[in-house]
Length: 385
Image 1 (cartoon, rainbow, N blue to C red):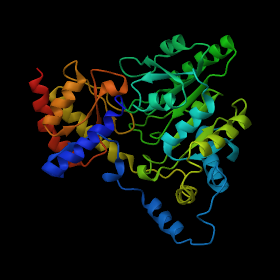
Image 2 (image 1 turned 90 degrees about the horizontal axis):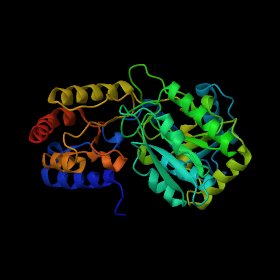
Image 3 (image 1 turned 135 degrees about the vertical axis):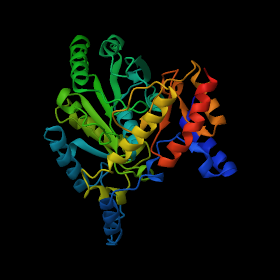
Image 4 (image 1 turned 30 degrees about the horizontal axis):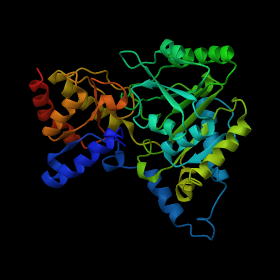
């Protein structure tokens, strides 16, 4: 509890400040909660109404724990085209968002003492997810530009390594791990598999896969590495984080697929999810490939980057997602985030993501929040010089 999420802490501080000062006077960049300001696609609204009108007996009943066959088939068909591999419904398990998906995957894979390598910066709750199942997180730094340091990952692999967990586009940096990096990582893991006689799984957390900018492509882990698993959700690409709907997908080339699927289904039950929400499964079945207008996020990214660069902040421009991860003007990122809070600007310290000296800005906010926060960002920056 003492190490729990900085994100939620700042979010709750923001709610308090908004009550005291008014929403328009608080610049809350703490939580990646897009539906507050980014509307869902029209197609989602149409399907929501259509599915709600279906009141036939049984539509709210239990289904197979893996999810409705029709929903899983729709996803498998979409992934077959997206990744140029032949998927089947028996490679897909519906999940309660990406967080639920990751916990189901880790429950299935980990024995006590198994190690999971995580490149830093990383989503803050990964360590807790691994700890849930008595696994051991092994944190490995990325390069200065947040690209994968494949040599460092390979050096961290031991006979106890069960998985490598990556997130691209990355939260908190917005970095997309390029195809060369994924291929190099796959080759390194294949060499370690041969050396230790193990199957090291590559788990790819991909809720931001469709939110990418400047023509960049997110490479397929399925094409690169046989022992790969995707955990994802519709929270970000359809702007419905509160609906908690996502899935786990197994690479069809993965070894022991039947046993893994059985494990995923059992884990879904015994972790208490039982199954993913029935109503949302019925909606999702009919809207594969539907994504919010990502130019909205790109415009916000450019507005924020131009404003902060003019002040003097240093950062790598995000390639996807809706986060910026600038350097703190002082080494103590927690102290700097506290200084920003005095200006009614809510951000999250980089040390919570495994990379001290930085801070995270979630820019899925109203344009006015970005524009009106610049005065406070400049004041805080100048006070550190």
